[in-house]
Length: 148
Image (cartoon, rainbow, N blue to C red; front, side, top):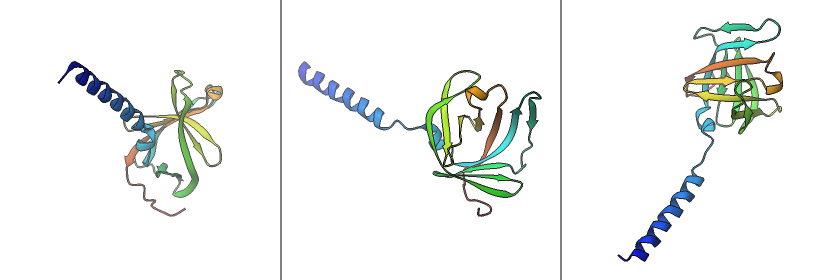
């Protein structure tokens, strides 16, 4: 094979590789979020800054399907409706850009997922007195135990 032919093939392979990578770019959190998440920790509030640790099996859950969200508290199911995820959140403590979840009712919160832990943060302007909540993923099955 001539040097020109080899160079031409190399350029095509490089171009196709770049295009493929761009097409496969996906928000990782949108793939990891669906499932059942149980609260394990919350902290915040001024002036007291109350910190609470929750035992496994406490029943305070977030259930995310691929397009809807439900909250279960004291065995009552609350529908939060549809949600969307984008990259406009900011961790108010580190200033790092993270994901943001926005619900149908326009409420939103910065969040991140690390390993099996989902952490919701207050917005930057509320960091001093807002709450941080941490949830652990306990199931990938998103079937509701009760219908809302």
